Image: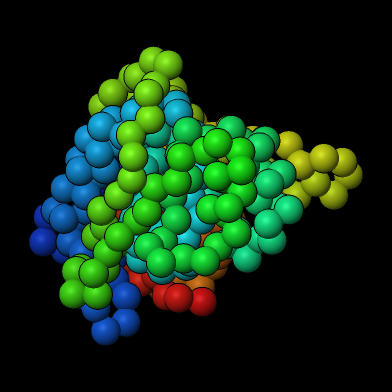
Length: 230
């Protein structure tokens, strides 16, 4: 499994993939359908493989699902939702994403920063009655310079994160599909995870450990991930 599009095939169709307290779980079959929907929708919006999509969402199943599904077809750039406006100005200008994805009804300063920088904002919409992690992307299409449609290939970039910048200006680190899938596989093997295990995630989902170890490591093992709002 060298891409996120392939990684979601690790779980059995009817087994739970994503869960949250007091909500219906999203099965692996539904997660695969969400990946297909997201890839098609991103292409319709004018975004394809290796195009960067910034994500500013609270911790929870929709953030986990958005990371997996957007990452299966484009390059994800999750950002800390607690950033202030000036911080979003810096990170979004540095990333130059094609889209910014925010939660419906949010008052995040990320949207204002994106508007100032001419970045298209797309709203992630989900209903409380939906399974955990199911969502729609609502927004205006952009005109792409060029578009590589469909699911990502192993050498495509799945994730870009900034370094902490403790010694100088934060630097962008790109991770390929093959890289993040190999890391997920190593986590799964090291922890001897099996499909009947359960992962309760309390890590922030803009941090490498939460994204790779908790989310992708769990999906690699075909087990259920409970993404709490913390």
